[in-house]
Amino acid sequence: MALVETLLINVFITGALLAVVLLILVVYLFAISSNSPEDPPGPKPLPLLGNLHLLDLRQPHVSLCKLSKQYGPVFTVHFGPKKAVVLAGYKTVKQALVTLSEEFGDRDITPIFHDFNKGYGIIFSNGENWREMRRFALSNLRDFGMGKRGSEEKIIKEIQYLKERLEKFEGKPFETTLPVAMAVSNIICAIVYGSRFEYSNPQLREMIQKGYKVMKMAGSVSVQLYNMYPWLRPFVINHKRIVNSLRANFGKREEHIKSLKKTLNHQDPRGFVDSFLIRQEKAEESGETKTLFHTNNLINSVVNLFSAGTDTMTTTITWALLLMAKYSETQAKVQEEINRVIGGRQPVAEDRKNLPYTDAVIHEAQRMANIFPTNLPHKTTCDIHFNGYFIKKGTTVVTLLTTVLRDENEWETPNSFNPGHFLNKHGQFVKKDAFMPFSAGRRSCLGESLARMELFLIITSLLQHFCFMPPPGVSEDDLDLTPAVGLSLTPTPHKLCAVKRLL
Ligand code: HEM
Image: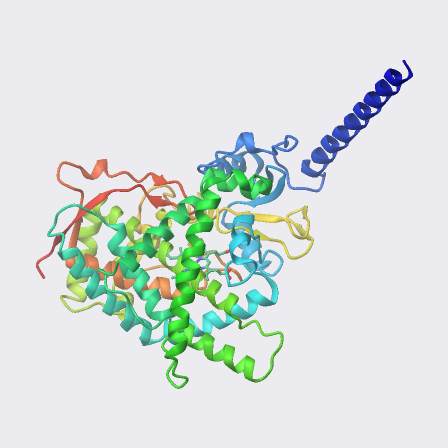
C-alpha cells in the first residue's frame, strides 16, 4: 500500500513539474515572440509560429508588401520565433541603408549560409573579416574587372562567343538562360582566375546548373523553415542536397586554386586569385599571425563572387530579353537608336551617353526584373531609435527593395514597363534615386560597376545583332512575366527565338 502511495505521489510530482516546465516554456516563447510597446507595429505573433500563418513562404515579398499596407513603412514581423523589422518604401529604405548605413549595415547570416561560409568571405561575413575582404575584392575587381579597360575588353571578347552561340540556333526557339549564364560565368572566370571555359566544356555547364539549383533550393520553403527552426536540419532534404552540392563546388574551386598556385607569376597576376595568393604569401613571410588572408577566406570569396555575379546577371539579362520580345515596339526603337548611333561596329562603354533610349530601357528592365525583392537580410549593429520606434542591436532587418523599385510616389506607372521613367521630355536619360536594384549604403552590391557595364554591353550587342521574338505560335501577349520561386526572382522557364538582323 505504502509502495502504491509513494508511486502515486511520484507520478503526481512528476506531472506537476512537467506542467510547470511546459507553462514556463509557453510563457517564455510568448514573451520572446511578442511585441514591446516601443517595437514597430505588426501582426500579433502566435507562440512558436510567430506570424507564419500570414506569410506565403513561396513568395514572402508579396505577403510582406501586404503587411506594409496595413502596418506602414516600419513594422515588426515574426518569422517563426525570429523577430525581424521590415522597412518599406523609398524614403524609409534610403534613410536606413544610406543615412544610417553603419547602424543598419551588418549582414544577418541565416543558418543555411552560416553552415557553409562560417563567417568567411564577403557576402555572409561581418566585422573586420567583412571589411578586409570587401576592400580587397573591390580593389582587385577594379584592377581585373570594373572601371578599367581590362574588364571592357574581357566582356567584349565574351560577347563574340555569345553571339556565335546564339547564331547556331538559326532563329529557332531556345532557352535563353544557359547561353547567357555561360557568357557571364566566363566573364567572372576571366576576372577571378584570368581564364575562360569553352562553351563545350562540360565543367562550365555543370557549374552553372549546380549553382542555379542551389539558388532555387536556398530560397525553397523547407530551407526558409530551417532558417527559422535550425533544429529541423535532419529533416530538410534540400539542406542535404545543398551541402553535397556546395561541398563538391568548394572542392572544385580548391583544385583550381591549387593549379593556379603552381603556375603563379608574382610579377604578372592573372586575376583575383593570384593577387590573393600573393597577399597570403606576403602575410606568411612577414609572420602575420592573425592574417585574414587564408585559404578559407579565399575559397569563400571566390564562391561569393561567382554566385553573386552569375545568377544576378543571367537573371537580369534574361528578363531584359523577355521584355524585348514582349514589347517589340520598344525593341524596334532601341534597334533604331543603335543603328543610327553605332551602326554595325562593336558597342563600347563610351557609347552609353549617346544611347539615352537604350540606357533607359536597360534601367527599366532592371527595375521591372526586381530580382531581389527583399534584398539580402541585414542586421542592426547597435540599438537604434528609428522613426519613433526602438530597434534592438542584432535585430534582423528586411529592406523591401521591391517597394522602392515600385514605389507609387517615385514612379509614374510603378507596375508596368515604361522606359519613360528614365527619360526627360527632351528624350535625355535621367537618373532616378529610387532606382535601387543594387541596394545602397555600405553593404550595397560590390559588383555594381561591373554589372552595369556588362548589362549595357551585352544587351546592346545582342539587340544590335538579333531580334528577340516569341516562338512560332506564341503571341507577345502570351509571354508570361510571372516570376519563378527562388532566392531571386527569375523568369519562369521559357523559350525565345533570336533572329539575326541584317546590319
Ligand atoms: C544585375 C546584377 C546584380 C544585382 C542586381 C546585384 C544586387 C545585389 C544586391 C541587392 C546585394 C545585397 C546588398 C545589400 O545587402 O544591401 C548585392 C550584394 C553583393 N553583390 Fe551584387 N548584384 C549584381 C551583380 C553582381 C556582380 C557582377 C558581382 C561580382 C562580381 C556582385 C557581387 C556582390 C557581392 C560580393 C555582394 C555582397 C556585398 C557585401 O555583403 O558587402 N554582384 N548585390
